[in-house]
Image (cartoon, rainbow, N blue to C red):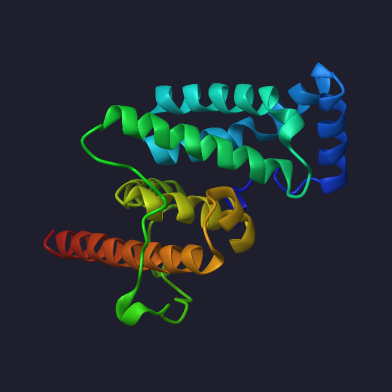
Length: 209
């Protein structure tokens, strides 16, 4: 799914040069960073908020906060990772305001069975022999991702949709690497289960025709 990823593999040196220029007051340099990453940030925000207008607000707020606090960015990580952390926090704040009765957090401890991380699931996706076109598969997957709990959905989107590494995802969400691996695994397991049910239902329905 990393094919969905866009423009986040730019040379780090180029990114840092833009950040340094922006720190020095070059508005054009920051605008280039916005152009480079706004679509990625929007996709992440939309996956978390599940609302286009909220996602657009998150993008604006995240870039504004990034620009305001640019001098705090020390360059110890990628600017994009730092930006994603800001965007995720803004998106979660949107959810908290929308659902005050339910606390939305990525800090809760998530453990797997027997308090250990099971082996990796190599193939959680639907069988490639399934006869569905790419657009339909994308829509099915998108709806299935939306059904995941926020803590799982956010990790899955950053890691498997946007193509961040496990370490970058951990840094962006301020989680430990084991926590990211655990949540990613559970997200994949849930997706596989839901997709399997969906395709079985579809096949059962088609067979009745």
